[in-house]
Image 1: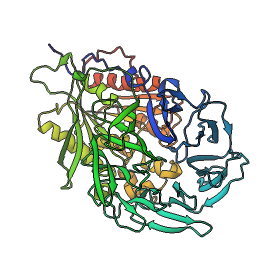
Image 2: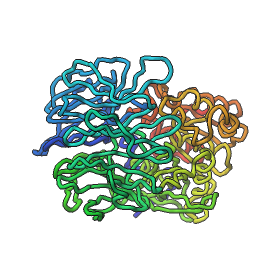
Image 3: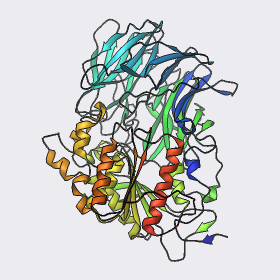
Image 4: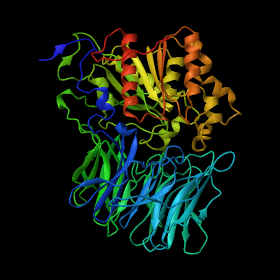
Length: 631
C-alpha cells in the first residue's frame, strides 16, 4: 500500500547518482558497421566524459577500441558529432584533446596520428578506399576572425598532404561516395542560413566540376547517400516535410512526416540501402518514430513505434541504430531487416528500475496564443511507495528544450523520472520552432524567439492547471542553453511561474550575437532579426535588461569553460537579481563546457535544483543534499 506524503518529499530509488551515470550508465552516440563488427561511441560521465569507441564482433563480445588516454569527440561547430569512421578493420577517430585524426586497429593497439595541422579540427570522416584517402570536414583556427571550413582529402599514409576538395562556403557536411568511387556528394551552406534553413547539395563526378543538384535558399537537404547502383538519394523539405528523394525522381514516399532531423551535429543518418537497393528508413510522425522499408514506391512499416531512432546504419544485409523507447533506457540495437525486430547490444543504463514506479508520458496538444496548436508530453508523478495527499495537486516543472530548433520526445529519461518519482509533474514542451511537425511549425519561431516559445510553455502550464493536473501556485520552468533563455524569458516577461532553473542559459541576446561561435554566429538573424540593425529587439527580449520585471527566485547552473554561452552571461543575471533583492542561486562548474558531462557535476546540478525547489516551495527533500548558496 502506498503511503501519502507531500509532493517533493518522496524517497526515490532514482538517485542523482544513477542519473549521472550510476553503475555503468553512459551516453550513447554514433553507430558504424564494418563487416561482422558493430561499433558505437559511449560517453562515460564517471571517466570525466571520455568518449570511447566500442566494438562488438559476431561472437557477441564487446571491447574498447580506443585506449584510456584518448577520447573520440570532435569540436567542429563546437557541437561535434561524426567523430569516427571505420573501414576494413581500421578505425579513424578525432581525438578530443588535440582535435587530430588518429588511426587504430579495430582489435585495439596504439593509435597513430595521421593529420599534422595542429590548428585544424576534423569531423564527418569518410574512407575512400579507391584513392587510399580519408575525406573529412575541417575547421581551421589558424587565422584571425572566423575559422575557415573546408572539405578535404587526407592521405591514409600519414603524409599529411591534404587536398582541398571544396571551400568558399561557410560550412560543409555529409560527404558521401558512390560504390565505385567515381561520384562524391556533400552539403554546404553559408551565413545567415542554418542547415535547416537552406543547404545546397553538390555532386562531383570523376574529374569534372562539382555542380549543385538540389537545395538552395528555403530548402533544407539532409543526408545525401548513394544506392548500390550509384544513384544519389537525399532528404529534402521542399514539400514542407523532410521526405526522401531520388536523383531523378520526386519524393519516393510523399508524407506529412519527417525523414530528416536538424543537423546540430555531424554524422546523422535516418536511412540506408540494402544490397538490392531497398531503403531501410526511419521517420517521425505525430511525435513517434517508426522503422520501414521503401521499395517500388511503397513504404512498408516494420516493428513498432519508437520514441526516437537515430544513427541508423545499413551495410549489406545488416542494420543497427540508436533506439529510444518510453519504458527503458536508450540502446544500441541490431535490427532484423526482415521484420524490424531488434536486439539490444548496449543500454545507456544498467540500473534496474521497478516499472511500477515509472511515469508514462502522455502526448498532449493545446491551444497556442497565436491560434494554432502546440505540443508537449505530460508526465504525472509516479512512485511505487508514495502518493500525494488527498485533494492536493502536484507541483509542475515545465521543461523547455534547447536548440531552439530541436525537439523532445517521450523517450525514457532518467532525468525526468528523477523528478516524477519525487512527486513532481513534468511538462516537456515542443513549442513552436520545434522539429518533427513540418517546416511551417518550425518557422513559427522565425523572428519570434522569446515570444512564441515562451507563450507555448506558458500556455502548456496553464492548460495543465485548467485540467486540474497540477498546482497553479507551484509552477516552475527549467531549461538548458536556448531552453535556458526561454526559461529566463518566461520568468521575466510572464507572471505564471513561481521559480525557474537556468542551465547554462542565455540572458543577454546582444552578448550572444557578438560573442558566440561561428556555427551560430548568424542563427539569431532568423530567430530575432539581423544584428545590429535590430538591436532594439535584442535588448527588448533580453532578460538581463528587464530584471525589474522579475519577481520570483531562480537558480543558475553554469559551466566555466562554456564557449557557446559564456559564464559572464549567467553571472551578470545573478548579479542583477541579487541587486534587485530577488533570491537567486549560482552554481558554477569547473572544467565544464556547454552541457555537463562529468558525473559529479551532473549529480550536483540535479541535487542543487531539487534543493532550490524545496526552499521555494517549502518542502524538505528526502535526499541528503549539500545546501546551495542563496543570495
